[in-house]
Each structure stands twice: as C-alpha cells, then as structure tokens.
Image (cartoon, rainbow, N blue to C red):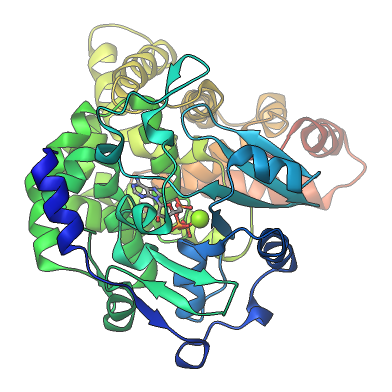
Length: 435
Ligand code: ATP
Ligand code: MG
C-alpha cells in the first residue's frame, strides 16, 4: 500500500466499540482454567491480555470453544520467561505454547499487518521477518480474516472490544471479511475456504459482497502452495459438517480448484453414484465424529478419488492389465496428479491405496483365503468402503452382505481357528490412525 493510502486508512479507521461486561454473555465460568491462568498471569505482570478469535466468537454464540487463543503486547521471549510450561514455536510467526496437561494455550504477540512493515526492513537474527512485526491491538485487528473472528475479550475489565462490527455480524449471523474482500482474499486465498467453512459451521450467511468476491476469485486456490491446503482440507472435511461444506464448496466454485479430477467426474454424472458415494462417505464421517468415533483421512481420500481412479483403472484393464495391476497403477497416477494441487501425507495416501487394492480381493470369496483377509490390518476399512459402494448404488450389495455374515459367524465362534486368524491377530495388528 502507498504511504498516502496508509495515512488515509489510519485516519478513517473507526473507533472501537467497547461492549462492557453487562452487555454480553461471556462468563469466566465458560473459559478454561488454563486460559484464565494465562490471562491473569500476563495481566499481573502488567501486560495486556485478551482472548481472541474462535473462542470469543463461540462464547458469544453460547458454544463451547474448541481451544483458547490469547494475544498480548508481551513479546514471545517475555511470555516464555513468564511461563515455565511454555515453548516458543514458529519461524515466520513466533508464538508461545503454554501447556497445562493436555491443553495448550496459544499466546501470540499483537502483530501489525504487512503494509505497516513495508520498507522498514525488519531483521531479526539476519532474517527478514516482515510478518513478525509487533504492533498494538489496533494493528492486530486488521490482519484478521472475518469480523466475527476479530473480537477481543479483555481480562482487565471483562469487556469485549470490537473494531470491525463483529458483534453485529454475530447477532445477524453474517460472515463478512474485514476490509475490502477482494484485497483480503488476494492477500491470502485460504480465506476463501475459511469464509465457507465458518458459514457452514456456524449456520451463518455470507455477506453478498464477500459472496460475489469468493465466486470471482475461486481460481486463486490453483496457485496456492499445496502444503498449505492440506491442513485446510482436513478442517473442511473433518470438522463435523463435511456434507454441507462439500455442497457449499461446489456452489462457490471452490471444490474444482482443490480436486479437479473429482470435479470432472462429478460434473459428468451429476445425480449419479459418483456424487452419492462421496455424500455417503462424508455423511459417515460426520456421523462418526458426532459419536466421538475415530475417523481417518485415508478413508476420505479413498472416497474422494475412487471414481476418477476407477475410470482410469477400467481403461488400463481394457488395455490388458489385470484388475490388481490396473488399480495399482491408476492409484499412483491419480494421487500423483492430486498432490501437485494439495499435499497429502503419504501415511494417508497409503491407506487409500490399500483400501482400493483390497476391493478386488473382496470379490474372491470362500475358504481360508477369506478368513485370512479378515485378519488383514486394513480389512475393516476396506469392508466399510465396500458398504459405501453398495450404499451408493454399485452392484456389490450381495458381496457386502456375504462379508457381513462371515464376520458375524467369525465372532460367534470364539475357539475356532478363524478366531485366531481373524479376530485376535487382526485386533492386535490394527492400529487406529490418528490425524
Ligand atoms: P476454530 O474454532 O476453527 O479454531 P478460529 O477462528 O479460532 O476457529 P483459527 O484457525 O484457530 O480459527 O485461527 C485463530 C484466529 O486467527 C482466527 O479467529 C482469525 O482471527 C485469525 N486467522 C486465522 N487464519 C487466518 C487467515 N488465513 N487470515 C487472517 N486471519 C486468520
Ligand atoms: Mg482456534
């Protein structure tokens, strides 16, 4: 930004609205003890300390926050000195993690937006750390993404500080970008995904101006570093609202740049089973999360790319490859194409490939071979995937029923050889995947 433009912005910057304790519903009873400890210790050391971001937003909505983030004017080293149970992390953004048992409170220092740092040549330890230019609370507000994510709960007087109209947007159920949407999306296209994710999660509507801009700028995701996108994808599909998120991403044209191969098959067969397979898979994920059951991104990856992989495998088979070889090769090709768009750690693609490769093996039924397959560490996932294919209308229902029956029999006979091969060994060898 040009210097005059900057001056103009600072002249035009609104004054904050201070929402006092008796005008909002945030009670310290709903803030975790660890977060309160951090806030109070900073305050007692004469630093400013605020809760910010998702926790303030969720508390104002009467929801339970996922975690508590704190901002302060203390520098990371000063935070480190104040808390023996803290470590400093991050190269670009240095911040402190303060640990209490399993809970981590993230404490960051007020940061200034990029343009404030421009031309100042900030160097620390020989590195340019433009993103790490410390600022004031007022600076910190303008670098955040959504108005509803830029509310600050002040431990000094329990008020909420609102510079951007976030409180009104919370009350109205509105997702709005801070500042000029176009500029803010170009600055960081991940915000396109965040806007949609929070709209779905909170049941909010996206402001029309922000909405138009999302559709116009969806293509920016194509140029994002793949590594940055993987983390976002997990948040999109493992947040408990995968089905709606998927529908909204497609509505805004954000699905295609993330998953071009999948989009191509969905676009061709709208309403057909490619669509249904994915919807069922996402729905299962949401249900499992709602029941606190573990979910693996590997299964999601298998579902997302099953159709494009299968179409390609069929072509290879038409050219004379065996089904096993065709699935192997098509899996390689589809995954290698995808990771140029979004990174996917190998531990997850490996699971997806195993699930795919077990599908033809599930067809060969009977005898010891089937019993041995029950003990395969990936059997359960492959069987669940078979059920998914049946649900989505593929002609495998009978096969799925056969495997369901075999497992029931297997469990009913504790002392047989089957139990030894399938149950006990299987259970030991199967390790639940964590994200
Ligand atoms: P969640 O409930 O998912 O944790 P959150 O709002 O706390 O929601 P985080 O990803 O934990 O989301 O980020 C914390 C805060 O940091 C956000 O509320 C927002 O103010 C800011 N933030 C995060 N990512 C961005 C971004 N890409 N651009 C601008 N601000 C961001
Ligand atoms: Mg958070």
